[in-house]
Length: 312
Image 1 (cartoon, rainbow, N blue to C red):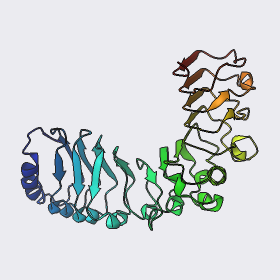
Image 2 (cartoon, rainbow, N blue to C red; image 1 turned 90 degrees about the horizontal axis):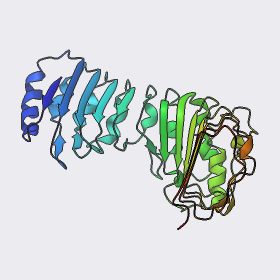
Image 3 (cartoon, helix red, strand yellow; image 1 turned 135 degrees about the vertical axis):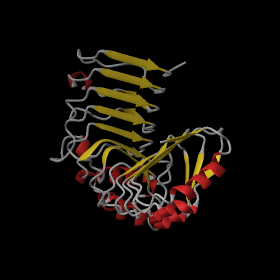
Image 4 (cartoon, rainbow, N blue to C red; image 1 turned 180 degrees about the vertical axis):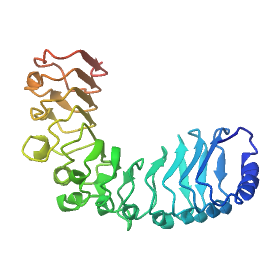
């Protein structure tokens, strides 16, 4: 492990990488880089000579930008790359990243932004995936990534046009995922289309935490209503952020094991009328729900309730 604090780190590391290329069979390389805010670093092409690297960590703070050269895609044996809390990560030849066929884990807060990620079938932990209307960013890119585990955030769902396209994601087949976040980034598609897309995004029955961001559909899918054999009936945490449909909240009676319910920025005028039957519910948090004026009978199991920013 190498720890560098100097603002001249780019020059130092370029020289260092040149010297380290003598260690042709190096398997693990970790570098801690503490730089100034908004600093940028471009890796030298010599990194491509570490053909036997399995684990590469270049741990930076959030405001340091990193650029990976095309030579990085020659590291065919790479299994884990760790960029710490980096928010700005650029791939100079992103189209070649699918050459890293043994890649299992990418640790970063930055957008995992390169096409054809679906070819990395061993991938377990990408930060998140953004669907676009571009070749290489289609929903089916996630279809065969069934080794994904832990948390998965899927953005850009407004770019999915049908239930059939949503089924291509095959969330139900990703049984090692414990948390899924589904996000619509804008309202460019109709509530009817959004409802159909969500119907096709049924996660596996082992899912424990689910979040819906900016969902504008008028109804919940059948798998959230207990009408699907493979639905996540053991869900423990459920979050709705930014549901603009007016009226009461949807029926959540299918989630009898639900322990935490978080509502933020929803236009509902009431909670589900049967919420008292959620006898495992321990935490209820309601914030920025401006139309909500009263609460129904709540379950005796509640240990924590927070209501904030709901009216002036």
